[in-house]
Image 1 (tube, rainbow, N blue to C red):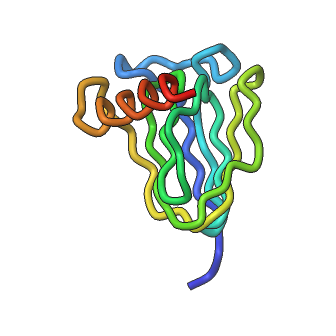
Image 2 (cartoon, rainbow, N blue to C red; image 1 turned 180 degrees about the vertical axis):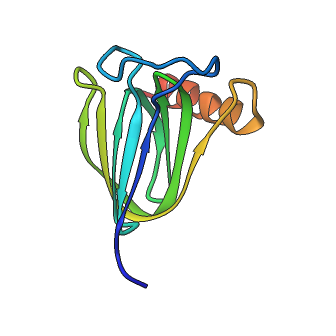
Image 3 (spheres, helix red, strand yellow; image 1 turned 180 degrees about the horizontal axis):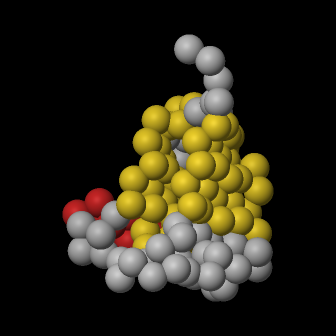
Length: 114
């Protein structure tokens, strides 16, 4: 199998209308050869380890899964996150999903233990 890139760009809202990709709600990601991912629209990074990175984007919670994941760049002013490692899944989470609630619990626990 040849290497390549996968692009995801949010250009329509649920109503089917065009969205300005330069506004504060701009979100998308690029995966290169399952080794690198650059995500736009990241507002915070929660719990993370080498297998999972929980983020919140302008379009909702997003869970990144893989092996040997390392955050290479995080710029919350520019809302950009860059990660290296073997990427196995990129999953959007619903606000009240069990996974999202579990990640919020990890964030609270880590804040209490600081």
